[in-house]
Amino acid sequence: MDCDYTQIIHQRGYNSPAMQSHRELIVEPIGLNPDALARPIDFSALFGNDGPVELEIGMGKGTFLTEQALARPQTNFLGIEWANWYWRYASDRLRRHECLNARTVRAEAMFFIREHVADASLAVVHVYFPDPWPKKRHHKRRLIQEPFLQQVQRILVPGGRLQVVTDHADYFQQIEAVVTASPLKIIEYNRPGSAGEGEFVGTNFERKYRREGRPFHAIAAVKQVAE
Ligand SMILES: C[S@@+](CC[C@H](N)C(=O)[O-])C[C@H]1O[C@@H](n2cnc3c(N)ncnc32)[C@H](O)[C@@H]1O
Image (cartoon, rainbow, N blue to C red; front, side, top):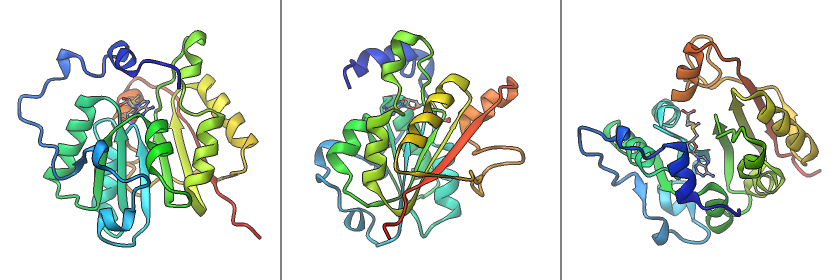
């Protein structure tokens, strides 16, 4: 990707002074040091079991990840987030809830996936409310484009799933087009069990946008099993 992420984080206001916490955010043992991670990561060694691994990209405050990690202790969850404050907040939250089946990394998603995620190693990739970059000249910064779909096809196990929810109609059109053009097969979107009444997924942004009355769009697709 050809952009400066430090500048983007600043532009998006994700590390603004308003985002200071009154209490100390403790990252360990959930938050991992990306420089110490293997290339690719051995998820069985990382989690200490052979359970399925689900990845959430841009977990923000970690609402979805925490609820899912608590609800499904046999599944391993990895959250990646590039904004330092959100990464720290989510890691601390998972730690306080003793979600030892979850880990987080502060990283840029495409870089992290290319460098650290092995072929056919993930059961689900979750992307909820990805940054829409509404200005046309910024569209190239959108995460869900053809190179991302190629990586998703590579890292999912056969039968593994991609799930995306957004409030942005124009970005959703683009997402639908690239998913349709990819080898993934579109399936019915199923709300996760942790979603509340009437919710698509139940993230922080969904709850905030819902109060503003915004419509949501969801898509799910599976990696097809070779015959
Ligand atoms: C609009 S927020 C949504 C947060 C959360 N998923 C929710 O629904 O409440 C998008 C989040 O994705 C993160 N993000 C955006 N692009 C990313 C990338 N390429 N790699 C890692 N994190 C990213 C942002 O820092 C931000 O926290």
